[in-house]
Image (cartoon, rainbow, N blue to C red; front, side):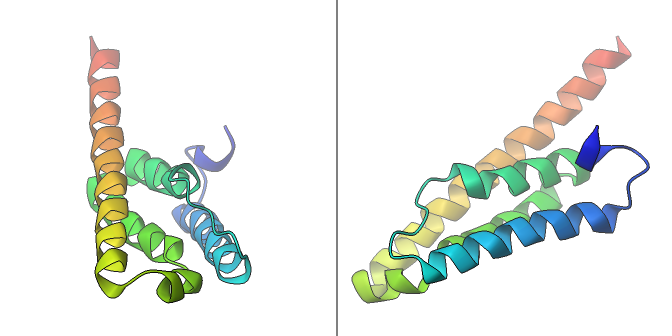
Amino acid sequence: MGLFQKNLNPFVRILVLLTWLCGLWIYNYQSEEPVISIFPYLIPVALIAWVYGVGWGFLVAALATLSAMSASYATIYTQTELIYFGFVTYAKLTGAAIGFSLAKIIHKNINLI
């Protein structure tokens, strides 16, 4: 089952997903065209929220939001627009964390029937 098998060390999972976010941040920092799609940032949020719950999903959503805000945005947008974009990105990612945490609870309860 790969990254989310039962006997895998939890630190390995978190390290892999944080490396993913760091890679996105580095790409956004170096690239002229940063990644604006929410899906690459959603992958670690969804996986952490599924395995560890909504609290950890919120934390990873905050880290993913920070990795989405590249340095090139600061020169293009005003401070108000940056705050707005950061808030909207965090809201989308926390919504996904809530959704995946609830989906795991529902999945677990359906298997009990």
